[in-house]
Length: 404
Ligand SMILES: *Cc1c(COP(=O)(O)O)cnc(C)c1O
Image (cartoon, rainbow, N blue to C red):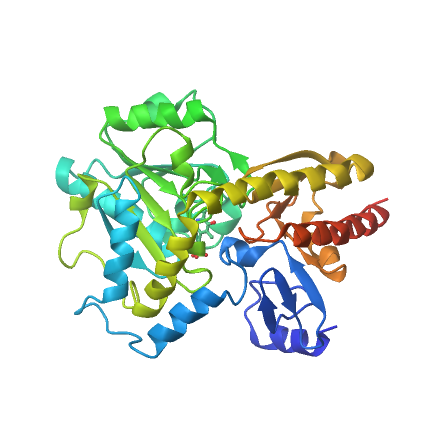
C-alpha cells in the first residue's frame, strides 16, 4: 500500500530497520492514518513513548506555547521548564538529584558513568565492575549495548568497554560472589521488556538490594520502558518495596518528544562534579515543557488506576481470543506492558505476526522472536481496545493458516 515510499526508504537508509507496509502521516489518540486515510489501531504506542497517544491537546498546547517563547539555550543557562520538571521528578520519587539527556540510551549511559565514577573516586580503581543480566536491553551506545545481555547486538563492535559481567536474570544462586567489593553497579530492568516481557521476581530484587548495600554498590534500574505509569505505578520500582540508587527514564517522559533523565540518590550524586558529563540538548525547554504536563497527567491516582483497569480489560480480551485460537502459552505483564508468548509450534514467528497485524489494521510489537508485545497508550479508550482486538483476532486467523 505504501510501496513507492518503502522503495525510497531502502534506497537511502542504512538497513537497521525493516519498516512495516504502512506509513503513518497523521494520528489521533490511539488511531494512526496513512496518506490514503487507512486506519490502524495502535497497540504499539510508539514503543512505549506515546503514552497519551497522538496529538494530545494539552501537550500540543504545552509544546506550542513554549515554541513561541524559547527553543534552546544550552547549558550555560538553566531554564524554567527544566527547573519545574526537575522539582516534580525529585519530589515525587526517592531520588535527590538528576541530569537530563535526550534518549533512553543516554539516560542509561549517564547512570553507568555516574555509578562507576562514584565508585572509582570514592573507593579506588579496582571498584569499576558492572554486573548486568542476560537478555537485558539497555540501548545502543557502546557502554549501554555492552551491559545489555544480547550478544547479537555487540557483534562486530569489539573491543567493548571492560569490566562488565552478565548473570542469568531471576537467578539468586551465584549473585553472592558475583556482586562483591569490586562491583561499582548492578543494572537491571524491573521488567525485561525487549527480550520477552520477563518480570523480575521480588526475592531476586531484594537479594540484589541486600548485596548492593553490603558492598556499597549502586543499584541502577533501567526504567526507560517501565517508567511514567507504564506498569500502573509512576515507576515500576514502587511495586517492589525497595529503592534503587539510580534510575534511567526516557521513552514516555515527553510522550515521544525526545528526552532522557537520570535520577540518583545520595551519596551516588557526588559521582559527577563540574564538567564530568554533559549533553547539549539535555533539559531543553521544549521537551521539558511537554514533560511537565505529561508528568502532571500521569502522576495521579485516578490516571494510574485507569492503567490497571485497562490492563484487566486488555488481558481478558486477549485471553478470550486465545481460548478460541490457542496461539499463546502464556500472557503476562503489568499495567500496559503486556507480553504473550507463542506456543512451541509458532515459535520464532513473532515478527511475521507484526506484519500480518498491520494488514488487518492493528499495530503490535514483538519482544524476541517468540513473544508478541503490546504497549498501547495508557489512556486508550476501552472501545479502541475492543476494536483493535477484533482486528488482531483476524490477524491471528491468518497467522495460523500461514503456519499450518
Ligand atoms: C528503549 C530502551 C532503551 C533505549 O532507549 P532509546 O531512547 O532507544 O535510546 C534502554 N533501555 C530500555 C529498557 C528500553 O526499553
